[in-house]
Amino acid sequence: MNPTIDLMNARCSTRAYDPTPLTDEEKRTILHTAMRAPTAGNMMLYSIVEIEDQALKDRLAVTCDDQPFIARAPWVLLFVADYQKWMDLFAVAGVDDMEGVPRGVTPGLGDLMLACCDALIAAQNAVIAAESLGIGSCYIGDILEQAETHAELLGLPPYTFPITLLCFGRPKTKPHVTGRYEKYVVHKNAYRRLSEGELREVSDDLDGAYAAHGFKPGIANFVQEVYARKFTADFSAEANRSVAWWLERWMGPPRT
Ligand SMILES: Cc1cc2nc3c(=O)[nH]c(=O)nc-3n(C[C@H](O)[C@H](O)[C@H](O)COP(=O)(O)O)c2cc1C
Image 1: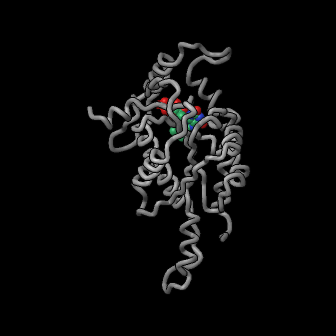
Image 2: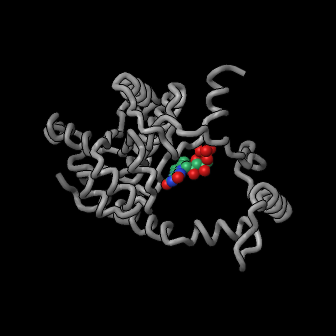
Image 3: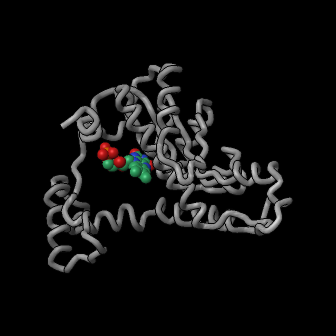
C-alpha cells in the first residue's frame, strides 16, 4: 500500500542477532524517533535506559525468565514509566510554596497508567524506526518479574516502573511473519462478549493455525495449552507477584 504500511506488515520479533553493533547514528535516530511519539500532556512520563554493560545484559538474560538471547542482543533499551523526574522537578520548582493548590500530592495509579502508555508508545516508535533501518527487535515482558532484583540492579527509584525491555540487533536470519487472529478483535460502539458459538469458532481456528505440532498428553487444544503453558505458568505467577510489589511501592507513603 505504502512503504510505512509494508514495513509494519513485514515486522516480526527478532531473537537471533548478528553481533555487529549498532552505529551511534542508528542509536541516535532510534532514540530520537522514540521521543517523537505522542506523550500525555507532552510530559514525556518515561525514561529510557541504554543497557550496554555485558555483565548487566548477562544478568537480565537470567532474571527475565532465562532468555539467553537478551545477552546476545547488541543493544538493549529499558523503557521506564517515570514520575520520579516530575516529582523531583516539582520539588526543585517549589510547588509547595504555591498558594491555593494541594500540597504533598504523590502520583496515583492513573498517573502510573499514563506513564506506562507513554513509555510503551515510545518503545513501539523505536521498534518501527529500527525496523526501517534493517534492525530487528524483541520485547521482553519478563522485565516485570523479579521486582526487588530489578529495582536494585537498575537503580529504579520509587516513582518508576520498568514497563518493558527491548532487544535490538540486525537479524541473523530473517524471522518469519507470524499470523494474527483478527476475527472478533474489533467491536463497534461498545464491547461485546463473544457468544459460546463464536468462542468455539475462535478455539477451532486457533487449533487450525497452531495444532500442527500436536499437543502434549493431557492437553486437548490450543486454548488449553495457553492456559497450561502461559496463564498458569510459574513466570506468570511471578509477574503477578512482582507487579503487585511495584504497585505497592508506587502507592506507598510519600517518599523523596
Ligand atoms: C508486551 C510483550 C512482551 C513480550 N515478551 C517477550 C519475551 O519475554 N520473550 C520473547 O521472546 N518475546 C516476547 N514478546 C514478543 C512476542 O512473543 C511476539 O510479539 C509475538 O509472538 C508475535 O510475534 P511477532 O512480534 O513476530 O509478530 C513480547 C511481546 C510483547 C508485546
